[in-house]
Structure formats: C-alpha cells, structure tokens
Length: 251
Image 1 (spheres, one colour):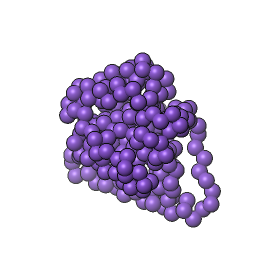
Image 2 (cartoon, rainbow, N blue to C red; image 1 turned 135 degrees about the vertical axis):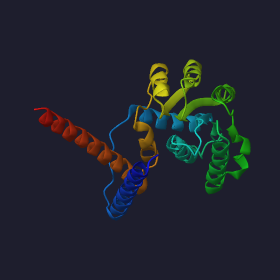
Image 3 (cartoon, one colour; image 1 turned 180 degrees about the vertical axis):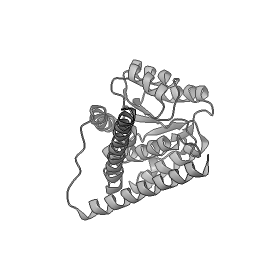
C-alpha cells in the first residue's frame, strides 16, 4: 500500500468517524425516533425470536470464519452485535442461544458476550461456556461443526451472519430442509449468491451492516446507518460527475 493510499484511507476513516459522532450527539439531543424502511426478513426474524421464547426452543447463531485482523472483520463485529441483541431478546426463555464460529478469537468473544447477557439478565444459572464454540478452523470443518449444532432438535431458528464462502450453502440448505427459520447475510459475493438461491429472505448487500440498527436502534447505530446513506450518495455523485466530465472531454 502506497503512502497516498494510506493517507486517503486515514482521511476517509476520520471523516466517517466524525460524521458518526456528530449524528450520534444530534440524535441524543433530539426526541425524534428514526424511521427505517421495512425489511421483510428482519420483521419475520423478530417474530421467530418471540416464538422461540414462547415454545422454549433455541436459536443458533453462526458467526462465520472471519479473523478480526483482516478486512472481513467488519462482518464479524456485526455478527457479534447481533448475537448480543439476540441474547437479550431471548433472555426470558429457558434455552439461551448458542453460537458457532470458525475463528478462535470470535469463539472467545461469543462466550464473553453470552456471559455478559446472562449476568445482565440474572440468568447465570443457564449460562454454559460451551454455548459459544469453535466449530472448526477451516471453512469446511467449520461447516461440519456448525451442522452438528444445527442438528439439535431444540434449534428452530438459525442466524447465519458473517464472512463465508460458497460452502455456506450447506448450512442454509440444511436449515431450510429442517423447517427452521433462517436469517442469512454475508459480506462475500459468492456467499450472497448462494444464500439468495437457498434461503427465503436473505439480507443483500449493505443490509448486513444495517442489522445492528434494526435489532437495537441506539443513537450510534442509527447514526452509522445515516452515514452509510450519505457515503452511498457521495459515491453516486462522484460517479455522475466523473461521467459528465469524461463526456465533455470527449466532445
């Protein structure tokens, strides 16, 4: 990476962080509640969580196999945030969620999150460290380990969020065949293509990164979603201006 590219990246991070901070402060001072467009998959998922609590079934959260030291770590942080919120939503049930991951650091963090949720909701008697497990250290071994957890008769809802390859189709297909509700999203284009073909309501593209705001709309989450929209509009504007300038130059 050249010095210019590094500088551009740092400027971009600084601008994004500043916008998120300013919008977060603005929302904390404002009494207005942000309104998001409806995403059918997330509406169904919230109903699935409620049914899971009522029926005493369990939710399985697959965190993917992204390393936190790689660019794909963004999807890993989203999956951990989703795990925490799912744990909170299902805290009144008898079966806390279980999490599988393909990275050792993710497995440790998932155990810590489940422990925090149990402590906050006074359900430490239901906490089990094995509920956050390292299913496998390679893509296919991870799929095999996750499938074993999904085979549990108590698991009626599967959340597949994170970085995967096309092998995620084994998980989504099995979940659909089992009749479990499946919420699936990935930052990988091959995985998105497979999930679109094998699940009823997958999250596509940037909907993955909007998930925390939809599950738990704190000012910071809402602000990050607004910044996404602003940056998307900026990219479109730059493309249009560049295209116009190129056409004028050709004339």
